[in-house]
Structures are given as structure tokens and as C-alpha cells.
Image 1 (cartoon, helix red, strand yellow):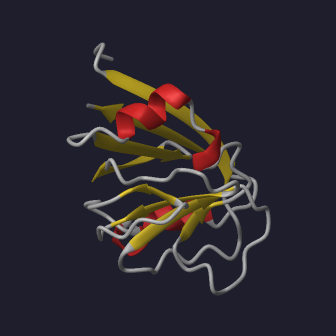
Image 2: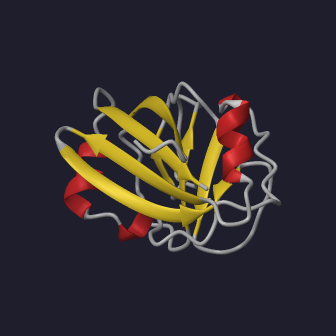
Length: 144
């Protein structure tokens, strides 16, 4: 990791109701339960939400040219999502973390202009995420 990078690690789990079919967003949540309407959620029972990220991480993510790499690992399979930070990020939601393809920002938004949403992840990977015992490791690396 270079001196310009700051990272956060998040532990979370799969859930039997994970669908991952949303075309523009992807989400992790601290909630342990999931309804059918949560079609962008790919991991539950996360140990962090956007409000829990370090002040240093949030500061770097709010820099005008901040780039965020999201690494998601489950059962030996890995996915990478690339997105952007923004000076407009609020980063205050107590339970959720949302990555968006759009420029929309609310208090749940972690990053914008992502190159993938939940429906872009391979179905083989999503099948792993449907196991409630499956540990899902998320690494966030911000570079500004």
C-alpha cells in the first residue's frame, strides 16, 4: 500500500435472500435480516457502516479526485469494484454502505460512479453470498 492509500476492512456475511439484481447500486448493511425489496444488498451483519469509517478514511474519500477500490472476497472468489469519492459525501448512515453507478449522494452513499452494481457481479459469486454461514470480507482502499 502506498502512503497515499488508506484502507478499511469490513467483516460481513451472506444471506439466503440475497438477489443482487439492482442495475445501479450495491449495498452492505449491518442489519442481519433482509427482505425481498433489498435487491442491491450483497452482504449483511457487517461490522461497519459508513458512519463507522475512520475520520482519516472519510477525509481522503471526500477529496475531489479520490478513487475507491472495493475488494469483496467470499469462499476464495474475489470481485473488485472501482468507484469515486466526492467532496459532497455525507458518510453518516449508522447501518448501511451504498456504492452507486450514478452521482446521487445521500447519507448512505459510500462512493459514486462505480464500474459495477450488484447485478454486474458473476452469478457464481452471488451463489456464494446466498449462504448465511459464508463470511464476506470487504476491503476498501481509498487513494487521493
